[in-house]
Every structure is written in structure tokens, then in C-alpha cells.
Amino acid sequence: MFLILLYTLQSISTEWQETKHLWRANWCIIGGPFLSEGDYTFDAEFSLGKRCNSQELVSKSNMHFATQFHLI
Image (cartoon, rainbow, N blue to C red):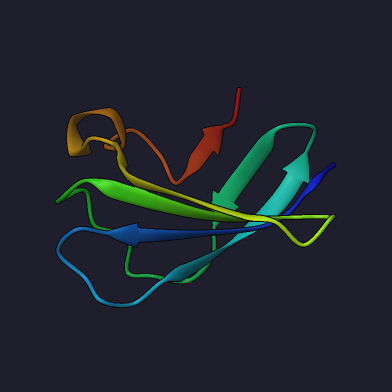
């Protein structure tokens, strides 16, 4: 099972932002504006059609440095 789509949502927004797969486990946020306010929720879709949603997984204090993040 592989991760094929990943979206992010800031707690201060109602609009999901698409991400782009760069390489290996690195993804970047597409579009904007990128705001370092509020926590981030992730919605993932996998190759077998399964979906996973994690509420407020990344706090705003951990996302201020860039729009690129690494999935472990």
C-alpha cells in the first residue's frame, strides 16, 4: 500500500491544500497562502483506496520553517 494523495488543512481555514510528492517521503504544500497560524490536519489516500485523516497532527510551532515536510 502506497500513499498517493495528501492534503493539508489549517485549523484556521476551511480549504484543503493539495500537496505534491517530491521524492521518497518528502511532500510540499501547493498553492497558498501558506500561513504559520493554526495546527495542521492531514488527509491521506492510499493506493488500495483507503483513506486516513489525522486531526491537528502538526502544531503551528513545528510548521513555521518551511512548506516542505517529511513523512516518517
